[in-house]
Length: 397
Image 1 (tube, one colour):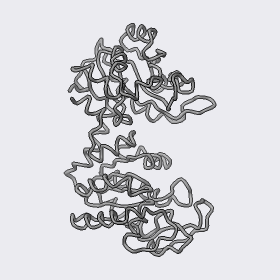
Image 2 (tube, rainbow, N blue to C red):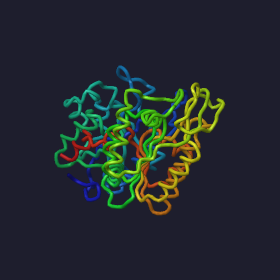
Image 3 (cartoon, one colour):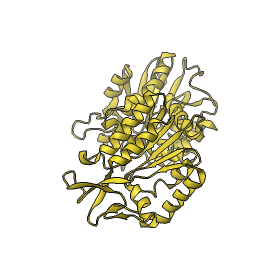
Image 4 (cartoon, one colour):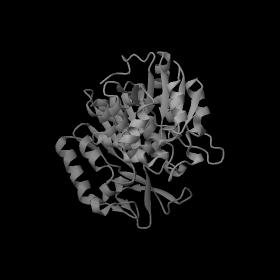
């Protein structure tokens, strides 16, 4: 497999699969969050600085049946130009004659973007003929779309086979893989994973895999109440998965057998309704009265989590501690975020991954104070679970 660090891009057209599926204002059609564009910029700049030209391809939204103006990549061309500091041409239809003419005529240092690959159903079907048509836009294939690496689509996976000796990862995917591997295979100890969110069921595989790799496992969010009920606690009207009580017991037993310090909340902030304006009180997590629900962790749990986190060398955070979107129930999540920042400033490696954790770290303006913020929610979770991602495998083969 070629490496972006050593590959000579001079005089080459690089066909880059980026993940520019960015949020857009429905009225003005302007980009409202350019995190993914900025994340791909180093790869694009590296190639044009080396004397290569760039053809970008991506999807945007979920068009139902062919072209839809609101999902056209044309809407983001100006914004991409600003971020990378180079004018970006719009190629139109990703397999149209005009696009082919434009990509063939690209000079060194020039950048163009094709229209939404999902305007064709062949993209999500992983159609080989469609992938081959896309491949004609480049001399070298670069996959830098970690957020879609778990999809076996034409542009993310199948296109790579048409570049047997000229396929490689961009800096973004390299960084994502290195960061997850650093957590899973760390020689530095202690390693701490913070796993939160609503449901145990969606995190079972990750939790079981992490038990062989971490020293501390902190459980937060709605899933904590399933563990508490499994231990015989009273959880009132809190979120619970009764079908997974035995699984929660099994995880607690596995943690004990493997010597993993399993941190389950001991106190909680409860509310009489799911609302920022609800009545609240602080109680022990195993003594929640009927009619009340736990929506955040309490101060004793915050202190216990902080103690573990600040003494860690490697930290993975996946999932919030409570309903952080509501100000009344964000203290636990804010405290965990701040503890991770403090640990990072003391030399720990910290990886933030999964949609809600990323949303939280961005909401609290702390993204620049941790080691790495993953751009690929679903892809990162599948990689953590040990699954082979099609987009990664296609380049490595």
